[in-house]
Length: 165
Image (cartoon, rainbow, N blue to C red):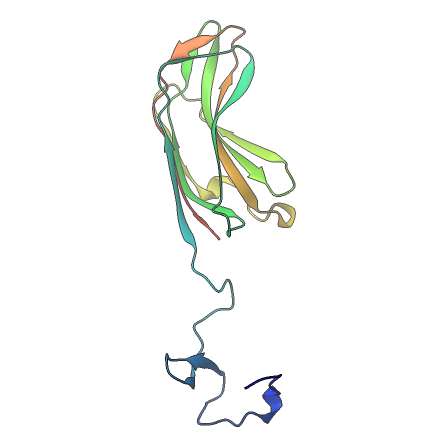
């Protein structure tokens, strides 16, 4: 069939209220809708980890260790949970591992572990979502050095679990 189809000319053809037209592999048939109106594709797992080797971290700086964005056809990242290694004390200050969220307006939010007693596991309740209608476009594992001097250490593993939509 070439040209445009006027949907007003379609007969019910056995369809019930709120059913949709679906291709079953050989013909178009009425079927129940798949759901709640949202994205036409399922969310994609977004699982990242980073375990940096022994390194020296410059004093009074925040360093991005590694940064991740979404797969090419996805637009946002929705955190589920993450784990940050313990903070390290040294040279008159502290090395604080963190997670940086990059918002769609290029602003950032840093979530830091300042506890030296062990790794910190957090979840999405730590993040103010729908921040003025923005979405999380990228994440990064970061290290903030509050010391005026470099600190040499092996931090341990950073882990992030989420979905991209």
